[in-house]
Length: 300
Image (cartoon, rainbow, N blue to C red):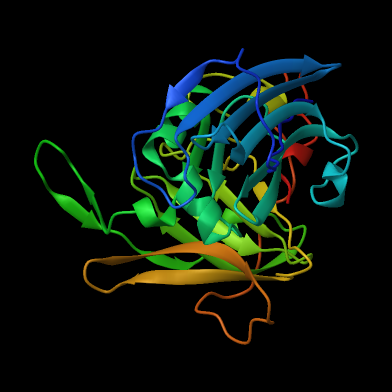
């Protein structure tokens, strides 16, 4: 079984001059002037670290992606082992953690992240550096209201709605479940599970299940898209300060809406999106040995 871990920490510490450095030309509230990127191996874990540094070489924000053994992943994701990934990001006084069972390509939602972290991860130089490590963040702020053909300039209005039962597993009811088209013509789902964690998944644009990220042949849990054409979920747990998950509807009727998830300090009293018990039974992708994988990697 394959999995991913991302850990981000923040502190006023200096960083080694040995790591490659990238200048940050854009102005930003955190005072970031350069990035340093390190790749290390600790036991069975592979760790990618992006340090965001101020002009005096102090670390003011950080992203670390570790793939391998994630100590508490089973507290938030179903499964019998602790193989996976954790995304831990920090900026200013804020931090967040996200877990996934994916091990190769990472497409995280901005679910539950503080605005200071959103701003940091959305900086063009930071986003470009992360993309080179196959780490992508789906930012609600980057969602355009139209999906447009660059050649014909014909656009399709973006829309949101409550998830269909066929989008979800029949293993549990999920809450405030929204599906929303993204800029690539795929659609994503955002919802809150029974532990108040926010969950984000991306659907294969072709609608085909058990495919790689490029929609090609794959085996078992090496597949990016699972049996119902959705990626492995990324799950952001609540914190002690923000213990309640909420799915937000944003945008306007002209030109269009989108949705995303956050955590907040007070209980959610109403939502534009409903609770849904899925209709799809748990199953996995073929392993090539005449039987399917367990399907744990796509559970939430």
